[in-house]
Image (cartoon, rainbow, N blue to C red; front, side, top):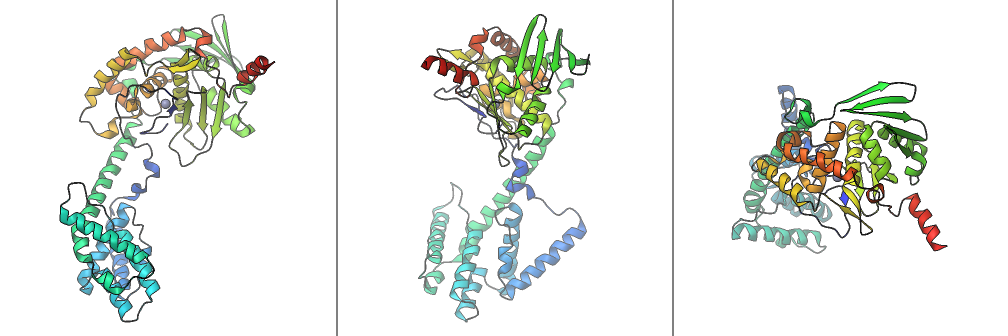
Length: 451
Ligand SMILES: [Zn+2]
């Protein structure tokens, strides 16, 4: 699942948007997460020592310290601001002017001057905000011109001297850099709060009566009786399949068919393990709804799994190592598949067009007006994600990333989805399962029709 973008691909179909929210799922990989202040005095002393050392190196003309600053982070930005200002007070001129005069007095080559100016200008570059004054914009555009000049081969010292670096630094770099640092600090604080929400206990919330009561009783080596609310299911696990018995109805998840697009045995076993953790109703939905599960390995992605509505395929990102969340994410994707059903030969999403559902969700969504973004978890992305997150919570007792928001703000939506799930389950099996192009059944059907 991704934030901002949803994990469902819906071809040619649009759905009514309830809201767009940013979230913080990706913060562990954020370049901003290094932001913070030294917390105890030995560290502070050490930092001051290091800063003094860097400053004296700069004053002696050793600019290599600039290259060690991780200037895209807020920590690096702060370091650059500090070092630039300390340099100006100590040396009586800006770093920019110092570089030029060292070149003029023959202490550095033109090539070195160009290289050093480039890094200095990269670190100094900030775009003014939209309501900046004309003078600020002029200074910014002059700065961009200067950058082009420095990057060109034939620049002259006069070209450089025409630019008032001090003015640009004080008017643009300093205030913009300070804003950047402040925003990142807020972002980090919100990310921390968002992380706390992920361990929110739904069982003590107002929606507790809607949550499933699940108990497993082992009746044999591979057999479990699962009590799910008032229902009782018998689940039999083997290497090739999972069988679920609901009264006299039998459902089979055939791994060979389901994994026809997965090459490696290890990957098959990882997915098998996830499936074995699903509750009985989710297993039954999986057996009816989905013919094909694929895998990918994208460590840069925040997405646990994805549902492709066009071909009715679930793809699991095996690079995500949080096993518990991976199972809830898989249940979420099965929820998408339940939500999509066959209409006029296409796989159409119900929740995205269901006006009653959207009305209920929208009404509850207004309670989030004015709340911080971190509270608006994944379910609030759009109606389709709302349905899938509710599905996971109602059928597994937890969603991967929306427990807090659903339990706090969406009790009526959850109750509605509970009914809606039953309605989708009452469709004929033929209407529930859309046979996508990746399904083994699709191959067999097209072979037959071509003969
Ligand atoms: Zn989704």
